[in-house]
Length: 270
Image (tube, rainbow, N blue to C red; front, side, top):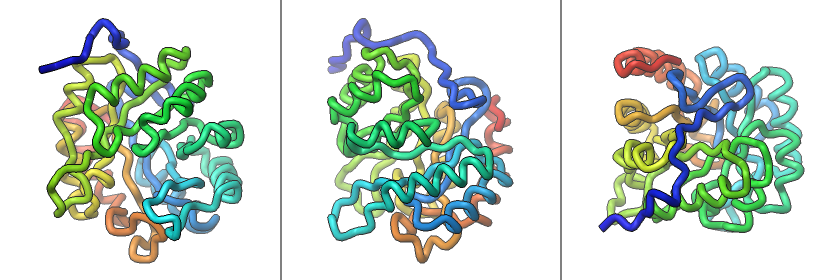
């Protein structure tokens, strides 16, 4: 039984501006880059290449939540400095994850869009604080969150006056172990039916396998996604985070060429 009270949700259609880009309109927005910022050269090489291939926004994590405390957890403030320098050189708007309300001030000085990761989807203190800003927010669905929980997490941000919220379907945890997560493609039209918020798809986390990223992404566009967030790394085999699901630079270029043709089929453009 559907327990969502539609009267509690923001229904009017939102088009979220990130710089000169509009998420939720006719044009698809592609966010691409490495899971984690490892070095200046790594990020600059990636940014230069994805821009040439047609990506609109550069992603790169300075702070990374990891299951193990012994895994690489990002370069922190040094990562933010690298992100700022690469942003200025390439002209690409940037998105990076905020994990703690205490990080917001420093990150907001660099980022054009804030990412709330799946592990923090119900960090209500963090949601409330980013809701007080005017920066766009990408809200990822939690690891095992229902659509209702996801939408009400968005309402925490909206209720504080920040209407620049974009939802991100990134797969949920199920009994299936072949893929990293189970990509819930039907959630895309579902949340569009229930709310007026734009939705993008993360086929990298949704599958965990680079060979599945492209077909999953195309399915998401067919389902009505307003954009994609793709993990890209110059040398995925050497990546400090999420290498198996990252496309290399050549693979991403090929992906974008295919995406252009698929987008046209569904009345969208890049």
